[in-house]
Image (cartoon, rainbow, N blue to C red; front, side, top):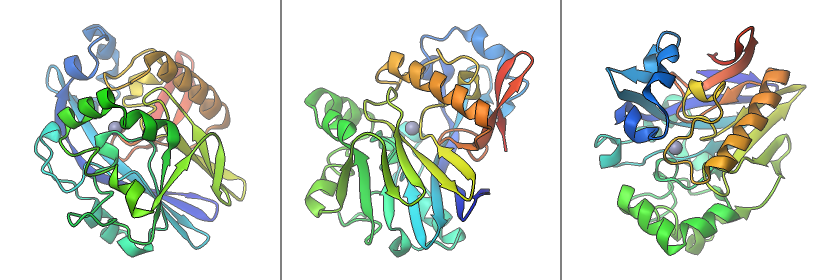
Length: 282
Ligand SMILES: [Zn+2]
C-alpha cells in the first residue's frame, strides 16, 4: 500500500504482525468495556476475547531523488516479545525495489525496541550503509539512562546496547532537537509523550501533505478517546496532549496519516462524524 504526496510517495512496510499481546497487558488502565464499541468497526484489532492483534510497521518515503526509511522494526530476531517472530523488513524493501544501499536517511521516530531492530546488521555495521540515522536527542539521552536502558533490555535483550548505542561510535548518528526540516519538504515535528523525544515526519509537496506518526496512536480507539494510553507510553499526560493536538490538526485538514502499529497497513485519515472523530483506513 502506498500513497502519493505530490512528488513523494509513502510506502507502507510490515516487519511483523500477530496477536502478540492481550488488551489487559497492553492497556492495563483501560476498562474492558471501553473496547466493546470498536469491535464491530475494527475487527482486525481483536483476536478472541482479550487478544490484541498488532502490526509492527515501517515506512519508505521517496521522491525528488531521495529515499528515507522511517523506523526499522523488530529486526532479524527471533524476538520473544513479538511471539518469537523474525522481522521481514528487508524482504519488504526488496519487494518495493529499494536496496539497503539506496536509503539516504533512516529516521527513527523513537527508540523503542520495535523501531530500531534493523539499524545494524549482525556484523555490527549499519544495515543501510549510505544512510545517516536521525534520532531525537531527548530519546538518545533517556534510553541511555540506567533505569530506562535496563527496562528496555529486559523487554528485548540487546535493544539498546546492540541496536542503538553503536550508532554513535559508527559516525552515522545525527541527533535532532525541535522542529527541523531535514530535506526540502520533509520536516521533523516533535510529538512527545510515548517517549520523551518521540518525533513525527511531515511530508509536503505540490500542495499535498502527509504525517508519519510513529507511535502517537496504537489503536483507532485512541482517536476519539485520546486518554487511552498504551502501557509503553512513557509520559501518559504528554502522549494525551500530543494525540489531542494531532487529532484536531489532522481532522481539520484531512491529512493522510501513517501509524506504525495501525492495521492493515497503517495508512488512514481522521474523519469528523456526527458522533465524533474516527479513524478511517485508506
Ligand atoms: Zn512501537
